[in-house]
Image (cartoon, rainbow, N blue to C red; front, side, top):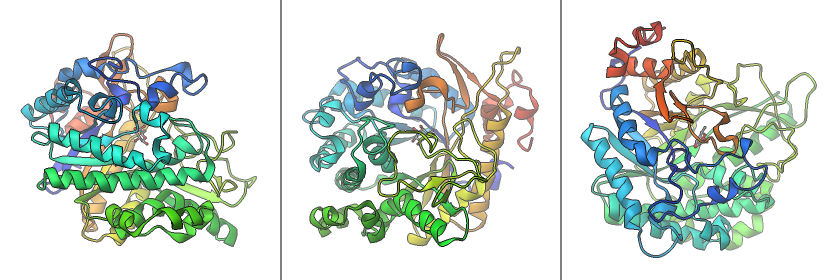
Length: 484
Ligand code: FCB
């Protein structure tokens, strides 16, 4: 398998997010985000880790861009930290914050790498959370205002925009289970956050269109292939509920301009949606996108109740379904996530490259012409630095290759898949798991900040025809043979 097996226009990239890599938490006018506050909450993050330093990318971005150039990628998906650009969440732009992303974008463009900027990858300014966060409708308007500042400041350099990353996580891990910042337990009211996030997406799209009509813009959703553990009515009902909360609650308003009534009813939020979601809101949310971003990691198998024969699996946060925290699926708390026996990554997420095709089909059925991009896909494993100083991450390499192969199959089926972004360029702050989970194709030594490409990076670079894959310094079988 080689890059030439794909259309020449197919975009190959890597992805990261601001709070996970930047560090420099207090520099150049940045103020705290909800993740700065949450990571200081006792017990919230494994090892009490924070993103204060992370990969120190804020100071080392030049080295990181050079690494990407050596990998041979076409594009880099990064996120813009709202608390750098508009530190209090309202009012004037912080020029020092914008300047960082201008320097980064310039460096990328000099190397022939196209910037893809995500406006919101979860770092809400804490001052907005203090005023109610995403449970408040006003936050959608604040997001549009910030998006306008970002596009004004960067629109001459960046022409690919993603409004939100995974609003499911922001709403339900943030405001229901509390596994993510701001760590609140608001039950079904977390669905109000989902609506305000989607409204924010639509309003931000208007700001992008008004300023840069030629730019390409869309949203990124985390979609799952959801299966029932058996053909029993009860298990099929469980699958309907989880597919509803994970996929349809987001896909239907964005692509069809309607909330799925069964899901709203499951949530027990029928009245709130009837009274608060206007037809204008739905028109704003459903305005055409240029593409849909899909983050794909795993498949869910669900049952109505625990079965002795199957192991309990983990949910999308990587939290065991037996954990005592409130459910991330309000109104459907009794549904059980079960294992299907497939191999899992260190997150406990089952590996199903075929299920990536399911989610591409799911999106394509709703919007047949809409270009689709895999904006994240990757795996965490316990890496070992070998005696030769290298990281022979066989499992991550297999995961990457098998999902790239699934992309090839998607293209062969005629699905409008336009690109693939590997999550993630380098090991980083994995949210509530802190630095205990490594998703990078490049290893980071957090004591020295030394970056070392893993075998998965060499495989990717060889596949892409990049300089790293051709480097004699890396003459492993992984770097020589993309089929290996
Ligand atoms: C996704 C997030 C990303 C990363 C991966 C593993 O849900 O968008 O930041 O944490 O999971």
